Amino acid sequence: MQFMALIYNAEGSDANYEGGMQQIMADYYKFGEEARAAGVMVAGDALEAVSTATSVRIRDGETSLTDGPFAETKETLGGYYLLECKDLDEALKWAAKIPTAKYGTIEVRPVMVFDN
Amino acid sequence: MDQIEKHLTRALRQSSGRILASLIKQFGNFDRAEDALQDAAAEAMRVWPEKGLPQNPAAWLHMAAKRRAIDKLRKESRHNAKDTLQAIADIEADKNEMAETDYEIPDERLRLIFTCCHPALSDEAQLALTLRTLGGLTVREIARAFLTSETAMLQRITRAKKKIQTAGIAYEVPGAEQIEVRRRSVQKTIYLIFNESYSAFEGQSLTRDDLANEAIRLGKLLYALDPTTENGGLLALMQFTHARSKARTNIQGQMISLEHHDRSAWDQTSIEEATELLATQLRAAQLGPYQLQAAISGVHSRSPSWEQTDWQQIAALYGALAAFDPSPVVLLNAAMAEANMGNLDQAMIKLQALAPHLENYQPFYAARAELHQRQGSFQSAYDDLTHAIELTKNEIEIDFLLQKRLDVAKCNAETKN
Image (tube, rainbow over all chains, first blue to last red; front, side):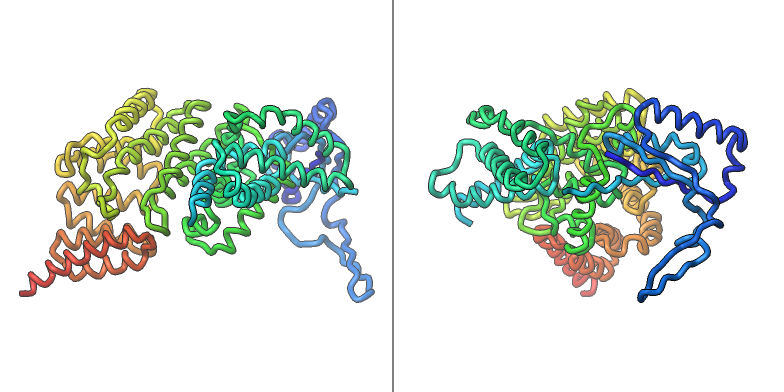
């Protein structure tokens, strides 16, 4: 089954990573290689800063655009991985390997499957 | 209740956990398994009165439930994928085995308990789900054990089952790297099942042997699979406690406190077994709360009388236990051990400090009544007992507390005259 690993952390907290930005890039690269080699990686991306976010809502037929994220929180969505794993335990094992798990939070959720 | 219904109730109480665990393994779904067992029970009520009681009611129920689940799967498969058909074929492949009269239901309960205790579920959901599926408790009983409403408990169980199903929690015993995390909630769950058997809130019987035996059996299974000192300590604790169960009530069914137990009614074989088991754990020198509680229970179990109990050792063990678990209940027991050493006033001070934390805890009022009585404050003892009675739902315990209150009232009248 597929699991979405949502990567949350306070913006700017990457700088506190042990070894600095260079190390975190290297560790993310390593994670990507490892997950691909294991056949777990389906997709994954980093997102631009939350300050670039625009939210769209339609209410009473009116489209409104808001500058900013869905909710103002300290920790924001910074990226994601879509992982193919046999069960939650395996997905959690991989989520724990994502470098941001050390200072942020990885939320793991199964991808919904629609029966036809 | 007629004979057939009695047999059915007994079979379900003894084996529903085992049947469910096996059905979930086979059909990969909690609700499907529960529905199938419920259907099988309804079928039993129709078939058994006509054809007579089967030799092995539990096996009959398991087979009937399996058939029901397969029927439903088949109906659904008309508009479902072909892997469902494969599942049906797999299940039907072992039909021959199902026909055997001495057929034994495969024991998948450890798999079930580890799944119910997955850390991705909240603690409360873990306990509730395990009690429901493995302990065979009703939602109502679990709600009472958790001091919450039946509706809220049902929601909690439904949510937990849904999370297992949709979040992809595997139905399996965890591997070495995860077992450490899972172990503690499994221990807690088994002990809660055991305790539930000793404080059934409703009904006539103070102990429900089925549940206690179930908890001990699970404890043995867990210890066999995973022989850690705490798993051993938990098992020893339950064995020590259960060894005293026959002395807990008199012929009229009234509850007897440990102080007044007929110690010759204690099951010495179990006590010896538990003593040996605990000694093995203690030699490994990896102390933990279950071993300490077992050690406390062991001191009681080996003491020839209440008066000769080594209270100093008991107080010391409670002190060590408080280091692991400084909960008000542990501190209450530590204070009572101190009272039994003769330090009444000091014990009372400690008890009063705990009062705000134990407002709805019946044993607290029973304990404070005991201290008041020993101090000669009969009116206060009377009031505390009244409070304890109000908080109790078990009829046997109520009888016990009423008797105690009557004694206190007599003392009170005598002091006034």
